[in-house]
Image (cartoon, rainbow, N blue to C red; front, side, top):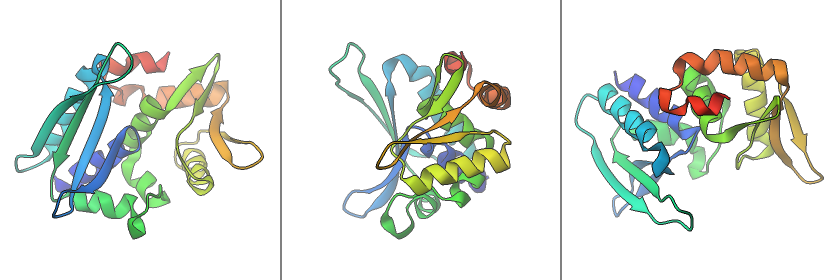
Amino acid sequence: MQARFVVRALSYCLGKGKVALKGKNKRPWLEISRSEVDKTYLNHQLRTLRKLHVTPLEVFWDRLATDTYYDKERLRLHSDHLWRVYEILYPQDTSYLSNQALQLSGIHGLTSLWIDQGRIIGRKGSIKGRYSDQEYENLSQWLQDYWNIKCHLRQNQSAIFQLSLNREALETLIDTITPAVHHAMKKKLR
């Protein structure tokens, strides 16, 4: 059960989630921030993590003011099992999206990645994030080898800035993740 909790928390970190060491004792906390429009999905993420965790979680909610009409809802939770997630995502205390993290996250990782970092432009898709060149290459290799989704790395003069999916690859991706997408986020599949 705890392994499933670690995998699901890891998959949420491929999207908008992040694990950080906070407080005087440097304990791991998972933090997910979303627009208040997407609070239903945020509640779903919390329910899923609670269901997979054996003991009660320390959970804190708050609202972050923004310059736009809708504020952000922030969910923060603590569990000792988040140490494993931190070890996988932050080797040597620096953020790095490794092949191991991608393969462990599975279908839920792919779903979180698309919901939070992916977008449809016309008939094509793209995944953009704050990733290094090596992380983009790991993502590309994972999509091609593990999911059989062909993608292309787009780059400018200095660095890779996005993963591009042609129409066929986008259809394959959407067909793959549709069963795992929560009903509140089906809008990201159009």
